[in-house]
Amino acid sequence: MRQANQIACHAAARSRPARSGVKVPSREKSLGAERMFGGMRTMRAIVSCFIVVACQMCFAVGDTNIIAMSDWSKPISLRNEEGHHESIRGRLLILQGTEPDYGGPPTTNWAVTFVELQNVTRACCDAIDVYFAVMNLHCELSDCTGKAVPMWGGRGGGWGGRGPIAPCWVNLPYNSTIRLFVNGGRMDPLMLYPSGEPWVHWSIPSTDTNTYYLSGTLNLSTHPNLSLPPEFREIDYSRNCTATLEFPKVRITTSRLGSLQETK
Image (cartoon, rainbow, N blue to C red; front, side, top):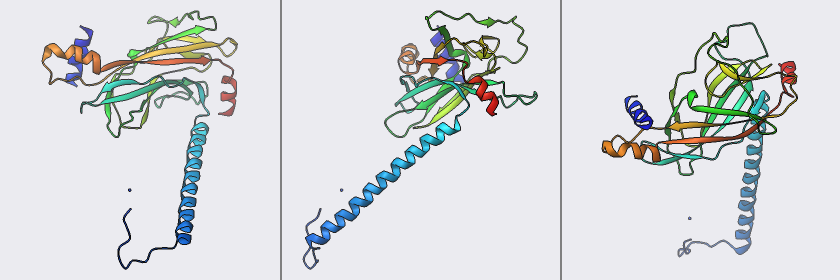
């Protein structure tokens, strides 16, 4: 029934011989040309390597405000509207920073949670529309012994701000990455969220020296195939149009919180 409702929701919204008279180059000249072009190929390879390394260094420098970042998940497969299967992977990311609509005084004591999605399909060059809903994110926090950490709050927990961010369709082109906002809150104590609900979270003060592990799953979906007879749509949808990312565990400590606040 749930899949049927989702389907309804999606429906709404590289030699030739030398010719006579042509002078054939001597063996010495041919060898010289080969050395020259071989050297050029080597130089291009070296330059390409430097470019890749430089890009990786730029990425590291640009993300000095990372509090926690998981490894990439294993890819899932979703079918796009052209009937091709696209491979999508994701990761969790927690950064120091504020939301654009933050209207309070300047502060360094703020953290934002994101999900990053990446199209890693090997065949060029399709895109895919993905339905992203923060309430389809489900995270768990455990201590070093594997015991679940209790959460703080609830609808009556004193939260007076907005509700969850509204679901949306996201176009993810070939070989591209997109960062999607989930939630924002204080950095000290560090607020971690089980989903898109801003009123329920874990709270870890900077004085807490324990190590924790955050993991989670995210259900993604795409457009159903409405050209199928109605009796086949639900099973086709479950096989090709919806799948769940499983984020690897990410280590959470408060050791960097003080240095982040001092350098901003």
